[in-house]
Length: 320
Ligand SMILES: Cc1cc2nc3c(=O)[nH]c(=O)nc-3n(C[C@H](O)[C@H](O)[C@H](O)COP(=O)(O)O)c2cc1C
Image (cartoon, rainbow, N blue to C red; front, side, top):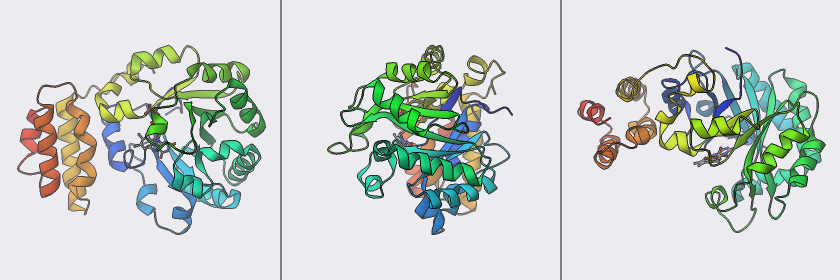
């Protein structure tokens, strides 16, 4: 399968885990998938075997996202991730949370391009797996195009071929991560300008993109799009990605068959010890736009609470 960032599904903590990615692979074979961010500390102290595992049969193309700022630690984790078979290793330079800032990584790294350069080079030295970064257009009051262009000029090297940019600044104090995804205005123009300034760089735009038609519009200006909340809240919006973005045949699964297959998967996972609360939460959005949304959601909640799908699965399937 050729690797392409034309359409990516964003890394999202508590969301894009192995189960959610199974769901997306029932809907699109070509979207580039990302894991949740995994910190170097968690990998090195061996706390995240589960977060790092992925299903090689179906999930590729897939990238793992790392959070960290120590070049040696990032190199060690890159080695591990590359031996696991990931197609790409992405470094998080966009997360504004206080916890992440305390660890001196995420968006605050945009203020230290020298360190970012060292981190990327240390990762590249130990693996041939492509290293990419996901950053913001700037931090705090620096939402001007010069900041982003200068940052990229300072970190760039010939092996760094892809940059994903969330088209908002990260405000490093006073806003929660959630507010940081809503309050700073989207400035797509800065990302378009970055592509103009570095035409050979693969530039992927992220932030506020609602669906495939909007994606096609952005693809006139940049190489790829990355969508987070909209496909998570309504997974069916990616059902025509393979045809509309990649000119290939869509998988063609309708809502009912997707839910049926996913619920089968949930049962198998439940038998291996994953409670339904971990797997079922990803299908809240599967009946988006249908009449019985409230009833569907409460039946999912009830099923999660009772951790018993056998009695409700037919009703759930009838509601999509
Ligand atoms: C619940 C949640 C968790 C997120 N976790 C991560 C993460 O682990 N790594 C990351 O780079 N961005 C994370 N993000 C940010 C998204 O990847 C994305 O940049 C942001 O939501 C903007 O894109 P959207 O408007 O398409 O959702 C998260 C966003 C949400 C809503």
